[in-house]
Image 1 (cartoon, rainbow, N blue to C red):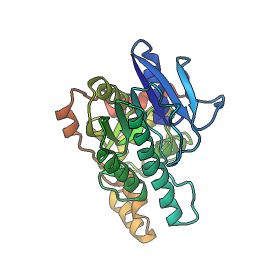
Image 2 (cartoon, helix red, strand yellow; image 1 turned 60 degrees about the vertical axis):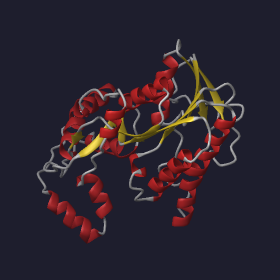
Image 3 (cartoon, rainbow, N blue to C red; image 1 turned 135 degrees about the vertical axis):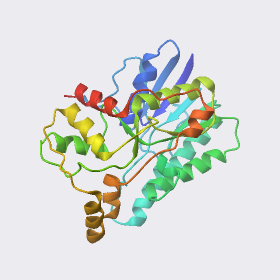
Length: 303
């Protein structure tokens, strides 16, 4: 039986990882690291088969020794995707660096000292290009992990946009809009975007652990979907009556230039296709399901 410590356990991805491995009680003994205890009554950590450990805020001074005792595998899901301080760009960058880079490397070094055999890092596809502070902080963590001079096996996952029960961010925002049944101008968007079911992600984590695999792996459902088809799938899942108006992509691009909001527009109508060919060629893991159908299914389950 392997003993696993999962960080970021109360977050969207972390909670799914915790509950998945905790249910495999014959194969894994799971500890879940959270910031504080007790958890609130709406906590997604449902399984009674796990041990909860409070570790406080993630910094380069966090003490992990007790949590790492007798642990075989660390799955590091804890991170921030938005800055904690918004007073200045420099402070925002410092937030990302502290939590996503320095705290990650601090945990990894303590894990190696505790004789942990494997460290699985939940990075981001944004680490590939590092176009923003978040992506830069994840990329820096990847480089630091790869430079560690230890016997610990390090696996790095770069997921695309992850969806599933309890998801937050843009998908949650779009869901709220669709539930208002208002018309939306996204009926003619023919872009290509990659998404990732949280269950497909958990499946790859399990594969890396069982095979004791190192390396860097891009992860998605292995297919793309347009913004228009995404909204159609979400509309079916929420039973929304929103009409998707046929507004050309060129209108969005023009609006983006005029309002200096090209980044926002790009997230709506631009391409974001993730190449997972290396992952497929170098593992026996295969994503399952159709993205549109999976999105509809999980939204129906949350009605």
